[in-house]
Image 1 (cartoon, helix red, strand yellow):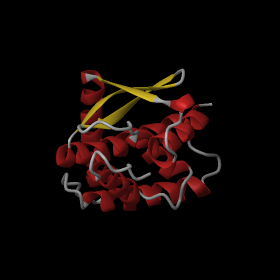
Image 2 (cartoon, helix red, strand yellow):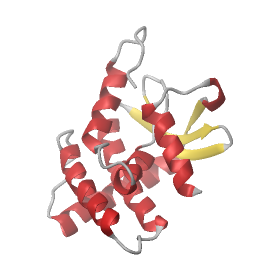
Image 3 (cartoon, helix red, strand yellow):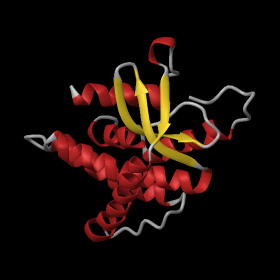
Length: 172
């Protein structure tokens, strides 16, 4: 059930355009921001201590995150039995928070709660408005499902989508 909701959010957040039946609403939330900042710090520590990688907050460091997530994906794909969903969600939260914080610091965004239909999840919205997005979900999906959907591509799509002039259609 959790995995199905996460995949649906990933599609709404960056892949498919939101539809009338799946309009997302965003409410800024300081507690979500605090949690994301803490998760991002944990990702920096995990990258340093377990992977020998220094995440420095630069946009280029998203490529380092991708290398770590690719390793997680390969390990997950071959694991029997699979690690618990909670473990994989936590990794998505940690590294998704890091990617979200890099975006927030370089392009402006807020953390908060996003509602789609009857589901509500932590997410982000760029300072210029537009559709909310879910770094936690997208990094989780990268680990457990999408071997081709890299963190670098996700980040580039976010930057491109929010760099478009307000009168131009947003990139998907």
